[in-house]
Length: 363
Image (cartoon, rainbow, N blue to C red; front, side, top):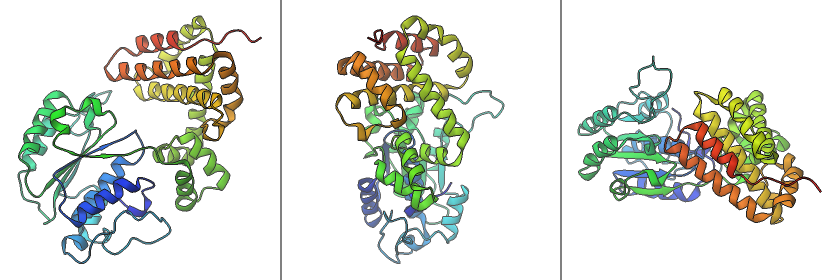
């Protein structure tokens, strides 16, 4: 668990909002909403670090958190990074800061991760939250992907949010707001995160990670606003090739007739079975391909993600047109929702591949 404020790229508005909370009175519950991999969890850990840093809790100076200039040192008032509290948070062993996700409390012998965050883990956290902080700061509970809580888990959490202790802050992160009950939403301060702009992501790779300018530009395009994906692509050439494989598969499926698409389902199930993340990657690649088809129609080529596939996107656009491309994006959103609702992967893929527009023969 690391939390270096200057290293967090993008999100100036959420950073200002949280800096104001540090300067005043922090809320007892926050919900960080936004796409996967854009930095919600990193900001949550950084916020927890600042709430518990000895420099801040001793009242030495007002906070000027989340420095947006990565070449500068942390400003006075930021979490110092040197006190015992900061070091324990970095090590993931702080007694007052806990991260909860689907793997928390899970049986390591299970072949797959649980689908939901354990209600028993949530109940244990709510009991723990009634105790005073051991190190004099605040008890902070970061619930990663709170939209993966079960209904009993939400019910257990709600009881604590209704009567919060003054020294406790819950930080929930989520991708899908629709999966969070209204009773939880109404008791949280909602902080929205979006994709990191491409220029910011490129600068992040160049300044903080030493990437060459041209490589950083290509990665920033392919990462689609996600620092997490960008760092994966930068760190692992094999990972980059794997993702390019998804894009190639997505393009092949988009150009194929329905019969050929359905014939590919067996192969897809063999390679993706037991790994929902791989199906998610394929859906993401399909979405980016069809997004670029729309951009090709609207002449906004500079915003295309898959620049190497731009001629193919333009060919699909000529064969299908803008309305068909929009229909494809609607079908992809529907497929993602079906998978989130536990529809069988094969059924969701077959329905999607039948719904995607089919280009006519080249004329």
